[in-house]
Image 1 (cartoon, rainbow, N blue to C red):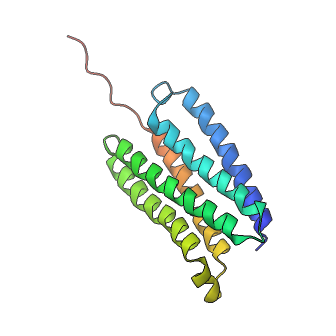
Image 2: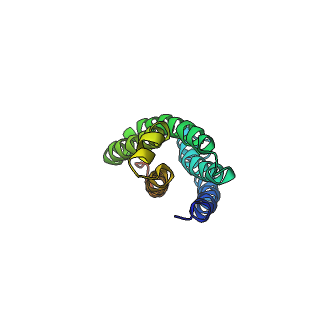
Length: 159
């Protein structure tokens, strides 16, 4: 795998998605300034930043291992908070997002910690991280869709 090429594209795509998310939030008053909007953007920020770090020092695995581990921890907290925010609005989606997000972000942490074990088994850990980052990017787009397209119930008529 061309690590630099892959992570370069992933970083650019996620920074682009972050910018598009900011535009979407700006046009939705119910999202502007909300924790939910921040957490959706955080997902794209994490993936873009971790992809940059994966390219910084490819000959020093400790750089990407620490970065992916920290990113996984921040992403894990973010996804749990986001699922809690969505629970009242989109219960089924919140459960699916929570479960998938926990698996993906815990996977990022586990691979960073167990990289030597994977390498010993002939599995390149940075490639496993690439699959997880790809899954997190897909999940992020789904999250953005659920949050942006959710409609608030109409307000009750005033008496």
